[in-house]
Length: 204
Image (cartoon, rainbow, N blue to C red; front, side, top):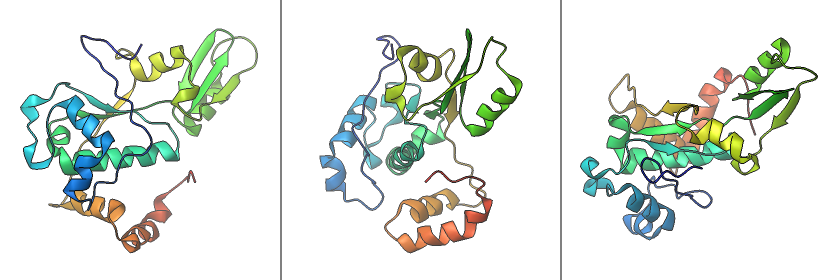
């Protein structure tokens, strides 16, 4: 379903990948997930990176639609930003958008990325008969084959977000990555204090 020998491959990663920010090069080289990922893409790491060797036009990060999935996606984006930056600069890195909810009414079915989209459909209806059944996905493993194909695997129907860098000032993104993913917890605490007022919802 996910693999197509002509156009698409799937690489499972077990658990949370290493936080590469500040990690020694020897630790990167001995990490199995990083080794598998580097070999699959064919481009090399850091100073040995060569974009011409990239085997796929799109590299898609696919994780659960909850806070744990967001953490794993953050670790992976940190890896790509620090070790394979041209993937981002040249538009090859994407985030898949698995839904958090599935709504069913009769023969009608829709997927919702968040609570806001769910509430809109619940208010307006799906156009089917009977009551609306709401299912919340706790992870990709809870989806059946049809759900996975429609929402994350099928190029004709899946939703993707291209990862990009839009620095208003030189080094802005690098500083933010250091602040959020580095080894100094006081910098993360400072960021939370300064930006908590902008958060409408928290998933803890």
